[in-house]
Length: 126
Length: 126
Image (cartoon, rainbow over all chains, first blue to last red; front, side, top):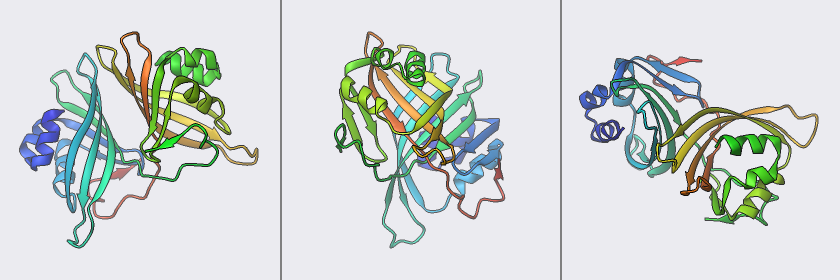
């Protein structure tokens, strides 16, 4: 997973592809989009518009090396230079094959929202 | 974690509280809300409006028992009986102390959105 993030941040698409199994499947449950296969998934990342930088905030990995989850923070700049940079939280679930190659990536991009009323007596804002 | 979800689904608040460290901290990064302490966090769950049921879809846990991540699906019914049930995906990160009690819970509730244009050549919808 460290190689995956480092290669993505460096836009080193050969190194990025080398972390992936040939049959890797990428899923975005929020849009119900799926990308199948290493070549397409590398291309999706290589063609992604705008500029972005990623910080890995937390990794949870099982002992067998078959599953992991990560929290990251992305700083995203649009294609127009005047646009302000946006900070986005993301969550990623990974599965791996027995050679340590990534077989599945599932991404979530949760957005900020206003808290519902009725729990102010229990909650502080940060 | 299994005891935590089973107790929540059963509304067994004593069993739910028994999975938590006294100083447990609950955070919702999307609303920047924080609830500190077992009593408040149990009360937050006990008082949560409407009806809901949870399915655990994936758990990733480290070998040391200090961290875990989970994907769940919630079926939520509002307080008004006419309201349709909603299906929500949720993601949860947990930390544990050396006794296996939960010291931290961070929840994310990602919402559906329309995919941006420009990647149709790589993507299928599901």
